[in-house]
Image: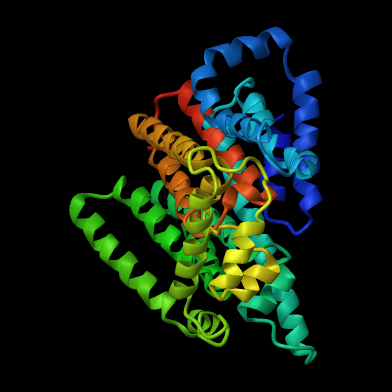
Length: 387
């Protein structure tokens, strides 16, 4: 069972989206029929039911939204994605899993991200060597990563966080971990996703201040903020976010108009309950057009913000549930003094500000898989991770 869980982590960064699905299905099949008895599953689920309900609440919200959606045709396909919110927690909370297993999963996941990034860069360099084009820029590099760049950046931040953690808690392979962390930062720079730098700064600060004294922590915070500002002002970022690339507007203005269109739509719809799971968004697309966001209208952009995404589909009820869930998990990890878990959670929380993380396969599986495991191991032990 442990190796199947490792395979889920390893397959997350790779381009073939079906690979992680196969690893997940294999894990579920083995768990259902071979891992332990149904009686033991039931006992474990009953023992962990309060925390279990926190993660599965996202699936229950989706089911609730089906009852009043105006787009039932999209529900079967969407259910195959959102059911992960149910089946992964059920599996994780009904098996025996400890911190050592989590550490192994996290390690192989992080190495897998680094390997996949290195593979993409090798391909790019081969193309450049044979004069087939220079793809070391954001929109071209994404062709070799073969994943949505924001989601891939999230995976890189999570892996970089692992290398920071190892540098802090272990003297083994410290040089290797430092080099892999530097490579992760280089990958983020080449991808040129701004929110990833913010997520890296926030998560690493949370992790490091838990290990250092107050003076060193303050020093690191200043260094982290300064380094983040420096990266955001380097050529790749400036090139990606210049007015020409963003159709004669800057990113802040674009986001402002995008979110303004969403809030206008939310007010037009049922502000309390929204319009239901995967409801039609013709009114929103028309607002994009009216407010001058032609590309958002043509490409049918989603909210690019998980909180606003839930506002559209589930209204204030959905946003409140999401905030309660994230707040509950934050308090739970804090009480358990698990600052690595808090740091990992912060990556998702920050990325949700500029991307609808829980609307795509990579985001849904990554969030549910890691958070479920971290909740489960903290229920089993009060000890800190390699403290």
